Length: 89
Image 1 (cartoon, rainbow, N blue to C red):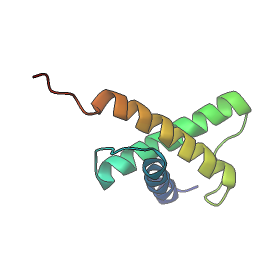
Image 2 (cartoon, rainbow, N blue to C red):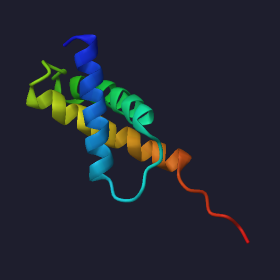
Image 3 (cartoon, rainbow, N blue to C red):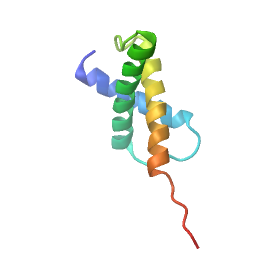
Image 4 (tube, rainbow, N blue to C red):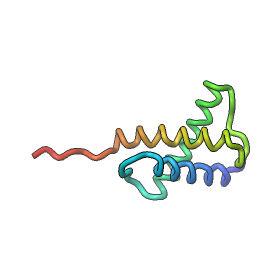
């Protein structure tokens, strides 16, 4: 998969992860792209480590599932780190 295909996969995977997770996640399209690309990398790495599979082509279902799963994981961690802070009164 080429560089631009990987970016597009990351953007779409990040957007799908934002749609799946309940609540409001901060960040615009740039943050979604970064989270998606990091999530796709994490998903591919975990897929290779745990299941001995890797990111295939752009239209491979395993690539999408690993990228979306990794994006969900990254988005959850992002929400925990940069989530809403409650104001003390």
